[in-house]
Amino acid sequence: MCGIVGYVGRREAAPILVDRLDDLSYRGYDSAGVAVAHDGVVVVEKCPGKIENLRAAVGKATPPGTLGLGHTRWATHGAPTQVNAHPHADCTGRLFVVQNGIIENFPTLKRELLERGHEFSTETDTEVVIHLLEEYYDGDLLAAAKKTAARLEGSFALAFLAAGEERLVAVRYHAPLIVGIGGGENFVASDITALLQDTNKVYVLENGDVVSVEANRIDVDSFLPDPPKALGTRQLTIVDWRPEDVSKNDYPHYMLKEIHEQPRALERTLQGRIKDGEIVLREMGLASELIRRVNSFHLVACGTAYHAALFGKYLFERVLRVPVSADIASEFRYRDPIVDGRSLVILISQSGETADTIGSLEEARARGAKTLAVVNVRGSTLAREADAVLYTRAGPEIAVASTKAFTAQLTAMFLLVCYLADRRRMEWPYPREELLAHLASLPSYLEQTLEQTAATAREWGQLIANEADCYFLGRNVDEPLAREAALKLKEISYVHAEAYAAGELKHGTIALIAEGTPVVSFMTQAEVWDKMISNLHEVRARGARTFAVAREDGIGLEDLVEGVMTLPAAPELFAPILAAVPAQLLAYEAAVALGRDVDQPRNLAKSVTVE
Ligand code: F6R
Image (cartoon, protein in one colour):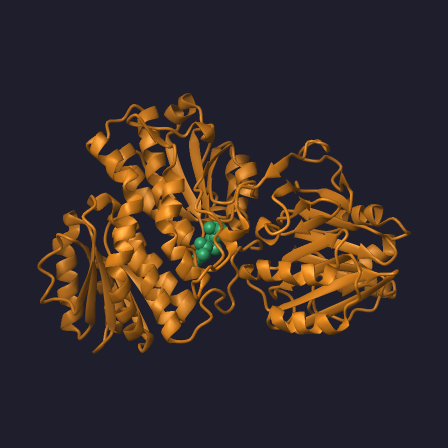
């Protein structure tokens, strides 16, 4: 989704803005632009396509001003052209805006502004914002921004610049925005990854905040008559990510780096959380009495995080013996969900900024449910808005395709279910000490998995790259894994893939299995082993080329499959976490073989901050 950066300080703004836009490029974009103020004049450069185009243009043309705005655009309203790229200017050419989000009432505002004689040059919803600002501007950017924001409907983060004013003004309303604090310089950005090179001190803005940012001064106001939190209570957050966490090191792609970072990521997820035979999640802040009172659990998320929710559903039901639902956030929020004061709604998200997941939290809260956010990004909207938060601590995830955040989410599901079981005084259905010892060993199991599966994943990936379709099968806890494998393959290689609960295949989709169609089966669960074997026979009988991911003791597959990737001998309950690794590697290798843009696949954004 769109990315915003702003700089005001002592250094030349243009190169800083372009570098920071590069840092935000992982969010997904199709054009980029900057506006730089110098001696009362503002110069704008914008280009469709890659940041490098912008960098070249900026190098030639931009003045050495120390105040500026930058933007990466992920097109919603209007094609990704130079004209539609941000920043946008008003009719006088003295006011400028960049935006992330959607202005839902832009058609009404545009009619009104056209009647008042404003001239529009783009197809974007954003342009109404700057003409509206022009209506209200009388030399005070903060006052005009407040009036402008109060007229807008939708979800938006905005940053403004006015020729002749030595400040930026930024607005946040249901779209992420932070202010970074430097020495004699300050920043505005959509997320912290853009600022790690410059500062680890940030203010996370609240909905309704309008901030004036000067080189040595920050003032917070609100455009809402009734701000959600008193002004003056914005807490300075110290970010514990390091600049090297967001560099590629020697890896060809962020995705590969992040796949290999998983052992370390899981170490952090588990750190300090298993002590003397207990799961310690004190920082989460869920009272035991409340946990005991809950009579329904609901897991809600989007995309890969939804697959973690599906895995959580199996696990929670197995251990807690209460009904657990797993929902796609965009469905949950609009399906009149049955939740009330005795429900716990658990929102899972890497970014903590996914619009539908935030919408689900609001829906759950409005119905009196308690909310728990399982998120990776500290200070994100979900983390701040939920009643309780469990951080997955996977570290910054830059590749669009989620990998380490996913295995950290699966691990968090284990921590959570054990914690809840203890508070609800449930018997664990597994020997406790043994389970905790294996849980603590997950990082080394993952290390072994990487070693054991990398070479075969390359072979399979290259083979699948030549196919039009690929099918993934699984049962029980392997079923969400099959879904995740299919999503990974689709999103980065563009090979069509589908996942099925293996028993469901013959209710229709088996018609698509033809001579040579690749079918990858996840077979880590003893309870459904025989069923999976039958499913393998069925697809082979129709000409499929079959492959399996199984545990070390998964012998007996030799005559049924062309290849097996074996996982380390961890308890089968943990096997799906390990099986995620070959699924990710296989998708990665297929994408590389096809020459795809692995880290920034077409049409996708890292953080989906609009509905
Ligand atoms: C797929 C992927 C997406 C995200 C989804 C939710 O690889 O990354 O499907 O999982 O957009 O994002 P978060 O977890 O940030 O809420």
